Image (tube, rainbow, N blue to C red; front, side, top):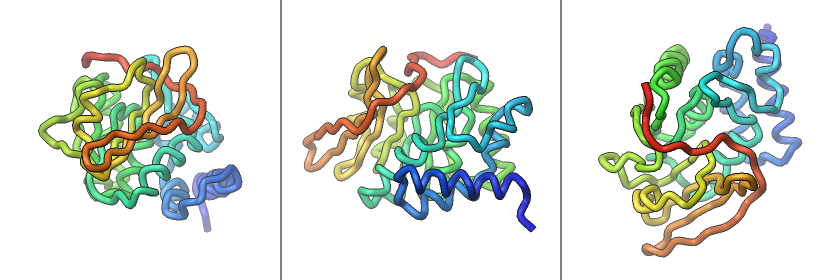
Length: 212
């Protein structure tokens, strides 16, 4: 018999499909991951709604549709191996990525959030994630280049160091802007960068510098 949470996760995946998410592997990942584990107990009754929720430290767990859409965009380029996530947060997006890509490298500037995310990922037996406490604007040079990059906070300008760490043939999806933010796709082919606006979004800002 399915648990209440499993039924809720399956319903969330069905709702995302109805909203336009087409990648069946992404939808399967959404249905397999217990999102309630990534929010505080007081908010667990809202954990399978298609909405962003606070996770403390002024941060949020992203709306499931946005998590699925950003992941789907990367997969459209045939990316399967090394993905960089800038902004681990709760670890929910990280878990979705870990189900779909061979190696996930995730950077978080807030140490307490990083610890919590690591505990949740281990609870789910997801061990293909490497974590770093650091400045997301700088990326993770020693692990570059990356086939895909997902940035889960809005950058006021294009982070050039992240583009430099993108592999040829790779793709980066990132919200850009301050008051008005646009989810933006960058692709690299033969060293040339192409930029494409995808949709208006709302994210917390990408802040420089790690904190304990």
